[in-house]
Amino acid sequence: MSELYVSSSPHIRSGRTTQKIMLDVIIALMPALIASVLIFGPRTLLLTAVSAAACVACEALWEKLMKKPCTVSDLSATVTGILIAFNVPAGMPVWELIVGDVVAIIVVKMLFGGLGCNFINPAMVGRVAMFLSFTADMTNYAIPSKAVDALSSATPLSVMDKLTWSDFPALFLGVHGGVLGETCALALIIGGVYLVARKVIKPIIPLAYLGSCLLFSCLFGGEQPVLSLFSGGVFLGAIFMATDYVTSPFTNKGKLIFGIGCGFLTAAIRIFSNSAGGVSFSILLMNLLVPYINSLTMPKPLGGVSEK
Amino acid sequence: MKRKFEIFKNGLFKENPVLILTLGCCSVLAISVTVLGGLGMGIALTFVLVCSNVVISLLRNIIPGKVRIPCYIVVVAAFVTLVEMVTEAYMKELYDTMGVFLALIVVNCIVLGRAEMFASKNSVGDSFFDGLGMGLGYTMVITAISIVRELLGSGTLLGVRIIPEGYQLGILSQTPGGFFCFGCAMAILIASLNKKGKKIDKSTGCGHDCGSCGLGCAGRGGESK
Image 1 (cartoon, chains in turn green, cyan):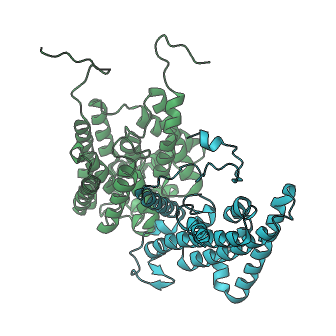
Image 2 (cartoon, chains in turn purple, cyan; image 1 turned 90 degrees about the horizontal axis):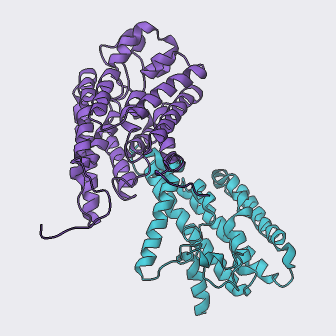
Image 3 (cartoon, chains in turn orange, red; image 1 turned 90 degrees about the vertical axis):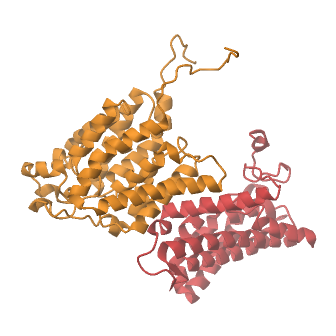
């Protein structure tokens, strides 16, 4: 003990690093990836690998150009890449997917200062940029060969009035048209449970999101509220997108408000606007409100006196 | 003559109306989808700006201070109507592209702003060059943005196809792309001006010369730094 250090808090640190958390997220995404390969074929693997590689390359290149320390080993770019790939249909041209990666990493993440400084979810913006630029390719959903009749066209969201409860198993297992990562609710739930068990995320946002989406779908009089919850990207959005640390509130109360807001907007967009972007736009809108939610739900310090 | 050139150059870069003073952004975002529309809008605005600056400068000692804004609007509206009629008669395609934004030049912040801030206080010659510089600064920006947006967003330049069908970034010809290009253009201009060692005041290009400035912030802009 030759030297004594005086430092400010925090004094207790866990061994948990960004890299370990991101590795957990990648592990949690694996069931959905496996399900997607089984449902949509091996092209899924190609798209996922290209997307992850493009994101990492963008981040490394940008940091090289800007002469900043290279941060790709924290794996956050890899997660963004996988999530973007999960948001495109199996037939998506590779160059269009790379455009989405560049928008996500360069425009949304690096221009604002890298991990922790982006004010909205990079993967969601990448998806929206691709959706607005290449609408035809983004909505040209691949139909799995094993799909049952009622689910053999487009995405189940567009034929919601024709669905019955007998289609539920197919919906739950994801054997229907859609984008790569969103269709298999079972795999996404397994991933979500893993994240909660590893304490990477708290279950508040996903549960509030799914619950309020269901509730508001019923209130707004949507067709088949329960079945519509299992189609489209609600599960992917609720478990993996809305829970992003950087763009969700810190406090439990804040997380609850955030989740309910996402569910409300998703239900409203789906029922009143007929747009395929319900989940993405609702999460992006709520991302913008996060600073306000944070400052409104800031807990009072113990013994603190309220400012008058 | 050197002073006149300085006034002219001011509008192009250091006090660029769109990117530094952030005036008239609405029309820049809306019209910069095609190069034809952007260029047409720029020329129309430059014409109106030069003419209105000269006329308002001529009348600056006659117009009573209390009713100066209505008087400016009447002068500006006269020239806008002129431009509108000529465009509709001889360039119908351009007229349709610009739509309501041509008529909205009447209330364009750049035109009114220069009338209030410059033409009403300076000589006719100076006002002419100020109008020309500001107008060309606007034209330059809107044309540059529209080249990027039309080339990458629709794959054409002045209607001629450059990039084959199916390889466009549709988002650039929509509103988000407009904001994105606008932000990039602003960043590029400010970065290049800063590089020359001339830091720009971030607040509305304020010169701290409250006596000659019509913005009416009464020195508050200076304190808030």
